[in-house]
Amino acid sequence: MQQRRSRFLSVRRPLVVVAALLCADLPSLAAHEGPPFPILMDEPVAGHVVSVWADPDIGEAQFFVIVESPGGGPPPAAPRVAMWFEPVSGRLERATEQATRQPLQNQMQFEVSPYFDQRDMWQIGFRLTGSDGAVGELTSEIESTPPGYGPLDLVIYLFPFVLLGGMWVFAVARRRRMMRTQPGRNVRPHAEVQPMPRES
Image (cartoon, rainbow, N blue to C red):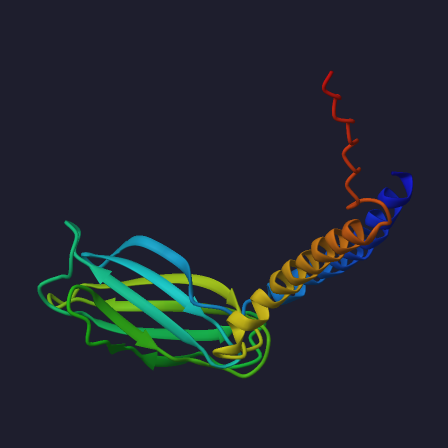
């Protein structure tokens, strides 16, 4: 029994080490390389309610501005949306990009793609001009991050879990194989043959 326990622990020990190494490496994978995330939610601006989602990759970043009426749903008239951005350090002058409305049926959404030249902290602003001439602005700060790998992102994120699952299945199969091959484990004792009683 003790020998079988030590064999099983010898199989599990590498799994624990691999799991610890992968978990230690997960923070580096968690640097933003995934889908857009919210940076401003349900903010009142120029008679509208605005939410902003960001994918701040270095190079051509993407920002999505969702505009709703105060009562919910798309507003009856589309405002003009622009985004300005500049490094917090002031090393570059402020630049402005006009947002483009996306062709969505049940949602009014604008997309704007500023250019971030390097990893840095950026001051950003979103200016809305309503159909009635009202102007409002939202500001925030964001860090530009290295771009992801496109469709390979999902594979990269899932790889550690698939590897752990495969190693666990291998360890369980190996343990069962060792238990089957142990001498005397599958040998059934012969039934004792009772002598037939003699007729008198």
